[in-house]
Image (cartoon, rainbow, N blue to C red):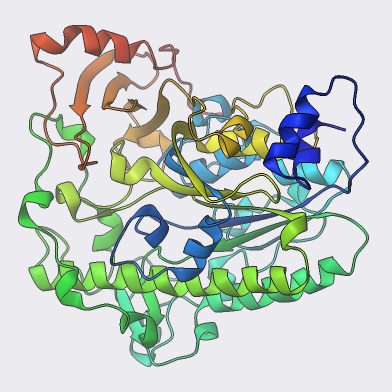
Length: 495
């Protein structure tokens, strides 16, 4: 039995004694369950991450028994490739999946996903809600012991609940009819929206799994606060919109940054109440920010229902819980909305890991990546890790806040962004260290460097303000940061 599994049932101090006792045999322990909670487009605007406005009591309580990773970064700031990367422990370049159309199985038929690994080791692996990308073609039957449930938004509905928006919204309909308003406050119960139904089914599934003989790997995926920012009115009422305005200075783009670093947020402009071009009105900015916070509190309540059921069933001390987002989000900062950049707001993600007997409500500033979740869970549950997994185990960081992480956290994003790789001509590679971010734009297919960005962060400011790449005084730092990026191998489009 591995030391990591033993630590799940005993105190941290006892773990140290086990580690120092050469040849000592620990009593065989049952394998822990795993509950993976994935949230779409969730920033670190949570109480446990220091946001004084956020009303997120359930996630905050989870943080009290978790290790909170304050510098966790996704591999790419858009849904499909980010989720594929996280669930395989492999980078987008390794998978050759960068867009919203390519399934990871199409190019990696033999890769072993995280739930597939657990299934192969005797776990019952099941999913409720959005874990992979939404459309049905992204379902991965090999991952699960049974078909995933409530995983296709086009089938399950639940983005809108009010009559006004439902008259407009037609899932899978003609272009321009797939979106209605960007926000919605409905006088409706939680289950009127899809995440309420996901939470209810996850509660039911936990009760069923608790009665089984096998350990389980349960993945629960919530869609809010992804657009549209829909939530019952009671969650909107938690916030005073006067506190949610955007400071004008925060809306400025980084100085001297290349044009290809930015976008015109087409995802937001597709909603019927948003302008098709140009800036948003201040009232629209406030409404959107209000909606994002309301949707975050709504999904926090649904997560709380699932965690309460876990505790009621006596499974809290037998289950490793991971909460993570697929990527971050812009809410008007730097003149940007939604995701799809290499900047901090888009690539930083909230990450909590609660391991019974091992984590005790501490935080770490170690630099980590989403691909690190795969080997960490595998090692915690004493499973062999496939050779192709590129992540590194975070077990040292789960108990020791000072344990080192990566020398730099790497992310990437292509341009121009249309959702299809056939339109790419450049790939931006970004590396974040404790104090800086470096972005190198390379020609897709050749690796030719066409632009560079270098930013310094202040202690109390996580936004990029001025590109320092052309400053001769930064030449040494520029070279040092560049060495942290992957080699400039040509990227190939196609099968």
